[in-house]
Image (cartoon, rainbow, N blue to C red; front, side, top):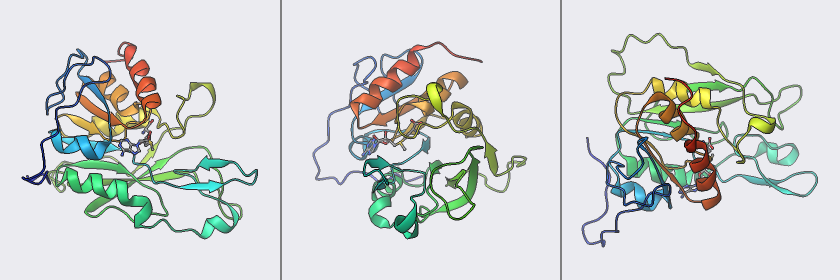
Length: 248
Ligand SMILES: C[S@@+](CC[C@H](N)C(=O)[O-])C[C@H]1O[C@@H](n2cnc3c(N)ncnc32)[C@H](O)[C@@H]1O
């Protein structure tokens, strides 16, 4: 399978270091971390071309901000705005980071979280729905948003895996004190369910946030490379990885 790569005349960037153990990271995500979970503090677009993972599982930023009624600027990724903003449709401007990463990733298997206002990534083969079991902000009339879309791309043997898994995944969205200090953390159970249905190989999350993908991989005994641009979230992810495995 072909991977979109760096042009020949571009200088080769030096290998990144792991935020957790400070060792250099090989293309397959080997560093000094004995649990097999590597975390890189960088822009995913710079580092992804240097890596060779097998399955991408990621929750991209959709770049949506709006002013709340109180006038505060709040991130509403994955949630709907009210009033005038409710008519807003996300455009290529909002999906550009996601689309760039999907393009660099090439034609390897991927699971990519979506937003109902945004166009799906090119090559989407199947759409799953995360039922959050609680209402989000906004909505129209009596309806409140309580789901998110998840896209499956480049899945191997799509017609030949004895599929017995429905397309709706029910996991309660995080609220209150159990929530990591991040605007859009995904439930660990949701990430474990997605990852345990992935083909074998190294998982990559280029938009790691609070590190739920890596935490789920650690619990499942799978190797993972995470990339996160904000240091504060790298710190949160690294702390979550300090705990031992929750179950085998
Ligand atoms: C939707 S959040 C992911 C949340 C994550 N699934 C979790 O459970 O915590 C997207 C993350 O991507 C990070 N991000 C945005 N642009 C990035 C880039 N170019 N490279 C790496 N990370 C980026 C943001 O800082 C944010 O933490």
